[in-house]
Amino acid sequence: MPEIIAGIAIPDTELAREATSLVLKAADETLFHHSRRVFLWGALKAAARGLEVDLELAYVGGLFHDLGLTPDYATKQRRFELDGAEAARTFLLEHGRSESEARDVWLAIALHTTPEIPLQLGPEVAVVTLGVETDVLGMDLNEITDEHRAQVVAAHPRPDFKNRILRAFYDGMAERPDTTFGTMNDDVLAHFDPSFERKDFVEIIQNNAWPE
Image (cartoon, rainbow, N blue to C red; front, side, top):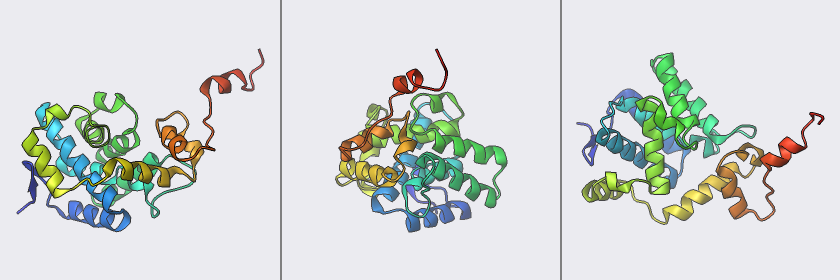
């Protein structure tokens, strides 16, 4: 019997079980519980909005979306979102999912810190952003009933989550600050590191190699 939380059945397939095992090994408790909540919030909001979502793909998207912050999967030269997206794509292809399905999950993870755009794409892309916006930013909590909210948090607690997730973001990006340019992630580095200097988009344009 599949585990059911807030009316959402956690996919009970070999692929889903292996995804859970992989993330449990790679991520700490904060990131694991956050990732499961992202799946659940996203699934609840997608259902409320009438979106038909492949829950197995949504589950991998939710679980892998912050995998690029973990030591086992983080690189030094690209955005953490891309690290997680690449890991998810490889995992899905190795488990028999199609290239187009793997691409949808890649997009879901790669774009989950980019406002608005994922919500204009397919359900398997939108569902991850819906979950992230709920768990991290508290957006549109009114779409989830108090009962469902309590059930999700009982299964996957969020003690001191606001501070812990900010620290997880910083720890995962501190050694690759240049990858935060043009994203909201540079806010995190600036919060924790007073010496961090943001790149200025206007200055880059004004001082680039093109002559006037």
